[in-house]
Length: 169
Image (cartoon, rainbow, N blue to C red; front, side):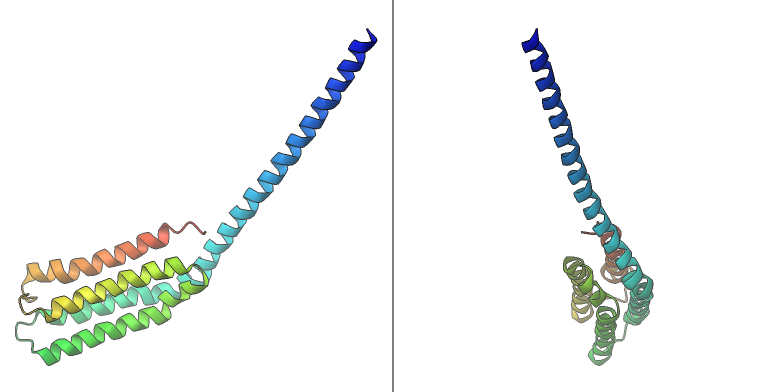
């Protein structure tokens, strides 16, 4: 009987130790998870405060400016000098976007900044190719819509999608 009583007390102590161990493990695991969650939340708030609240006006201004500038491409009698002026303006708008919007992401996430930069750079490269390709008549509404307007809209949508999908890591 005494052996049974000792075994019962030992089993109780072991169960108590296992319970304490599990409580400590769960506490540490939750603390790490909460810490990483708070860090993500902090980065998202930083993104919102420092970048989006300040920079979104430049983002939308860029797309408004290039939309206005590319409308000049609908003129049937454009010479190369005028095309170069239009293209130079587009590149200038791109540089302004980079300085006032895209570069702000260096402090938040370099991959995010790189993705946004690549999207706008690809857009501007595509517009440049379309402007100087003699085989493309941008004064034709269908060509203009497919090679210019659609590309601008797609780029804008993709960047917004990138921003909304940022997980804060």
